[in-house]
Amino acid sequence: MAKLIRSAGVAVAAALLALAVAVPAARAAPGGSVLVVGDSLEELSSPYLSNLLPGVKLTVNAVGGSNTFEILELFEASYDPSQSVIVFDGGTNDNPNYPQILEENLAKVAATVGDRCMVVPTVHGYTVEGTGNDGKNRVVRQFAASRPGTQVPDWAGFVHEHPELMQSDGLHPIEAGSEARAQLIAQGILGCLAYKESSGVTASAASAPPVETTRLQPVGRLAKREDSIYRTTAAGVIREAAMLAILRTLLPG
Image (cartoon, rainbow, N blue to C red; front, side, top):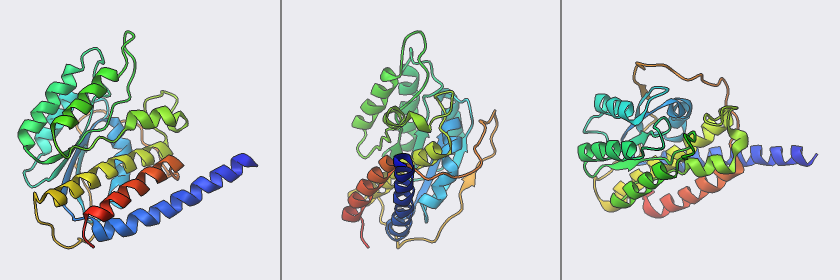
């Protein structure tokens, strides 16, 4: 019975969160054009982004199994100077013994996009020859520290807290985990848009109507996608509420 009560509580909280996200985001999101590049994790997460980010134009180019060299190629094929936010969702398929691979490719993206805001999630991947992902995540955090406004959704921390939302391989999330991951990415994008507004990089217009996501044709192998949407977790509720509170203080309306 306690388990049933807990599940019901999470479902109710998630339903309330969906309303809280949809209404303020539609009012407060300043619009903008966002490029999302990544691997199979982003393939699983990105279908949820358009509902979380009404008024934001999304271009997604994600191919399962991509390392950061390949994700850099996806970025180079998809980037347009009109895009104000870049989500570089990679590192999972890099050998953790060589974190400099991620470091070098992030630096190349940064050199191209200039002062545009970037979203770079922490990495949860396999341990190889006894080496985990600490090195890659140090690279992510050092990169963020070197670039004002950079957002770092803590996917690695989320997986540690919620292993039950992962598939049996321990690497890919189930439906509920994919939706929760999308919320982390969406928070990062909203954080970038808020930073752009607060820093005065670009003046924003009034809120825009919903914009369809542009999904570029994949050119490699795709990870298996799940078929239905589960409700997210209470941890996601706390993170979303905190982000919304911050955004209300930064954005007009």
